[in-house]
Image: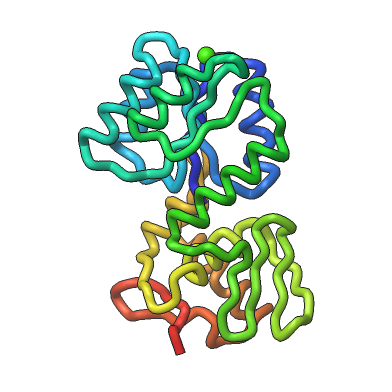
Length: 219
Ligand code: CA
């Protein structure tokens, strides 16, 4: 899952970025509204954590422009604890949920998981399909009930495929879930991690669709 963090406060930004990466999200960080706007026009994200008070372009403006382009990426706005008005305006401008600052990290992560879940069209908190189960909250993977240890990047390629069995994701789409701007991507990285998943979970968990990409078969 790839996240965009929009935060102008250097200390908060560093801390949240560190925490998101520790949770195995691929995360990019921008510090003003203009850069946020540019990132959202050029990259595909699974979720945006958007501070509202930003230099250059206000967070609300960025959000309104995003929705005006009919981009439906889930947006979590960050507001001050006492700023109820901001929350209402943010939600009405197209935000999906809000978090209050200073952040409670556990709450922030839970809200991120809930939004990612809803945007994938799921209500249940654990991905389960054909004996494979992934729990994003605990980072536990099991096959037929037996725990399996997946690396962060193996998890990152498996999760979006397992979230929607039968849907093909291209190598490029999987790369976007795996890496943020600063990472060096080797051309066969996705293949390497998929190979790792197959080795641990079984060869048929992820199928290659020649010329198109990969899928977790429905049946
Ligand atoms: Ca701010």
